[in-house]
Length: 359
Image (cartoon, rainbow, N blue to C red):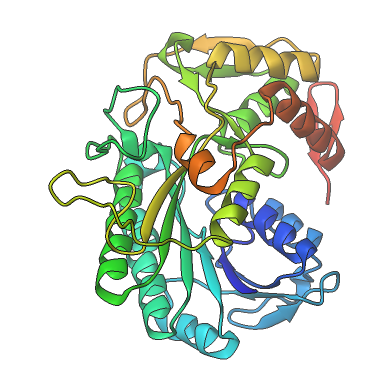
């Protein structure tokens, strides 16, 4: 297929583009390369897919030196005119929208950027899918949409209408926007609720990266809710396999959908929602202990109360993904952290309590 992947300088987008390219799809990747975190890591990801970052200019297509089936364009999904030109030129079969302003905590202090990227930008994607007859749109949602919901495990078939951060609210809004376009314009859309993604090339604002860096530098780590947290950590390879299963199986209307007892995960329109998580949460302290083991360091812990916008526990019900697409994530946290540790040590030159980024 010819697939547009947005956010390909990002963590998940980079891994997805690489996977699709290696199986033979034609991929066009776009990313605005903002400075939410160190752009050097974003450039390094692009280099891994053969993109010469020295050639980067806004809206200029760059062909990969490693994958003849890959083109990257530095482009903001808020730029409706250039986005439309991209859709018109490449005639995509499918779109996977991973471009978004990420981060729960960042949304507490910078709310405007979430409305711009996650709402306005996503609207531009939907409009392009509408006008250019895209066969399937898959897009990133988040486990954070479950918010105040205490029913465990989190199921797509349950109501999720009480988010506790603007980031979560923007992702829930994406699902509702997608359903509207599925209903009005018969666009096949599938929302993907990711659960705490981690692994090599991960984001520096996520717990695994923050904890590892601090431990190696001999600095204390901040452990919220006094460590009484459970997270359904999901390894990046499992996330990518889930996304690919979804891309290859476009959403269909649910013929049994009942308006008197509506299922939030499906519709009479070609709309679906899937959790992608391991379904086996571990304690935050257990996660820290595994990092300590892999990095051969002992963390200095600062116990703090729960932070605003956060939740104490996440756990994915993955039966819907398994039943519908015959897929279930499998990589253990032990294996996942070991793989991250190997990447981290290779990507960074690690001295005693000192880190120097590889240029």
